[in-house]
Length: 411
Image (tube, rainbow, N blue to C red):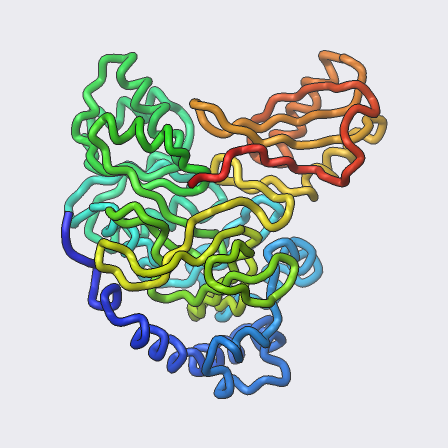
């Protein structure tokens, strides 16, 4: 696997920074003209004065955790859209709910570059197992694959037998989805005696890609690389064949800030990922993702010269990404309102060889009917299936934690 997507990937870091800062005032002015939220972010600051990272860092941060309340008060987008609603291609509804606009055009989420780095080339058939229902993930990957000239099987999530059968019949060369789902499909195909030997590449995101799972794919002769993206920002960073950190996309400005603030940290310090991406339909100025990461020193051995980050290292708040979806403290609060006689509640996220696990721990006496009702409520509120464990009243810690992510941080 050789070659880069374009010359932008190999320009000098100095040239890249100069070109990003040169374009920033124009893009900020366009954003402020179309987006009420961007105009508020720039209040008192002239776009033409924002020509450095230091100037950018003086602008306010928009937090993902604030979007639910903001969009409830000012629907549908709280002024974040940069074009009128009627000019959009799609409107997504992510858990929360959070509404994300998608503009018209090819590869608006900028996934083609990342898929190219994984090894996809024109003509490769791609089985896309990211969700298409309400959330943008399926369309993100599909847009990038089509931009590369790759036919897409819009497989979506679930239905393992059908996924395995489609893989055997349609012979895709590449697969996209959450890290653990490909293994589930391949193991099912093995059990059914189906031939999946056409598969060579996988691109995964939306969950922890643990070393044991990476090794499992490697032992089957598969190249499975990962990327880091959000519904709001699209592609942020992606892995190359060097497998040394995640390389920033060429069209984003990333800062690592001290959690809870907008203050940039020195390179190498772990902090919250803040992204500026100034697409016309959905311009975002200093958008705090809530994810933790750190800048890596040097450049990638693959020849791409952009900054690398260490990848996802946990959450700056209590939210956690499970099977591609976020669970948040607000969701636990919603469960508590539904069951006011129960004591403390806690969502515990863990992982085993089968993938991510979600467990609700609730302070209540053993009651099979209650456990079933809680399980239904968890699925309704979070969009995810989870186990329910009833624990003795007063046994959960009084520490304010509502979402506890116990998964190991990837090296």
